[in-house]
Every structure is written in structure tokens, then in C-alpha cells.
Amino acid sequence: MRLSHLNWAGVIFGSAAGLFTIFVLFVMSFGLGSNGIVQISLLLTGFFVAGYVAGRFALVEPTLSGGMAALILFFGLVVFIVNEVGLTTVGIVVLGMAVTIVGNAGGAVGHRRQKD
Image (cartoon, rainbow, N blue to C red):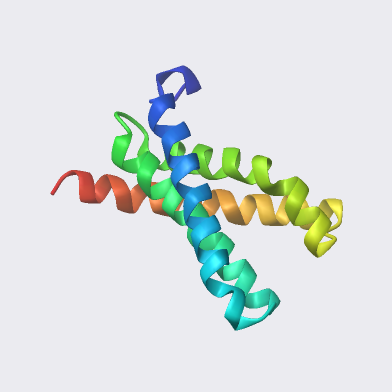
């Protein structure tokens, strides 16, 4: 599948929805402390939402749309993630792969909900 066939408006909208979700979850989580596992869980939830929204808007290849939405959001946030956590290059690559997988899963779930 070529990237030109994706619904890029849906992918960008999914990335924006994921960013908004991450922002809201982090604002709500200030009382929970700065536990690393909680922060990673909140980030992955936002990436799943990005993939889900992109999958709902996808005309073709919902998993690819979800993965691209999560990856675009990841590249937008990677500067803040590196500064906050202090990840190495290998850590960034591993987290990027995890984010893409979570976005793909969100896209698949979103597309499944689209058919209902």
C-alpha cells in the first residue's frame, strides 16, 4: 500500500486527538505522582487514541493509518520525552516501535468500530 492512498486528514486528526488525550491525562494525573510506569501508560493510551481515531477515518489500510498517526505524534513528542526521561537512541527506537504497534492496534479497533 502506498502512503499516498491514506486519508491524511484523518491521520493528522488522529494525531491531534492523541495529543489532546495525552495532555488531558497528564493534567488529571498530577495527583498520582511521577511514577514512570504511570507516565508510560498514559502516553501509550494517547497513542492508542491517535490510532483509533485515524482508523475510524481510514478509507483503506486502517492499521497503517493508525500507525502513522501514532508515529507522527511520537515524532512531535520525542523532544519532550527525551528531555524528561533521558532515553538513549536505542530507547527511542524501541519506544517508537512500541508506539507504532499500539497505533496499529488502535487503527484496527477503530476500523472494526467503523463497520458497526
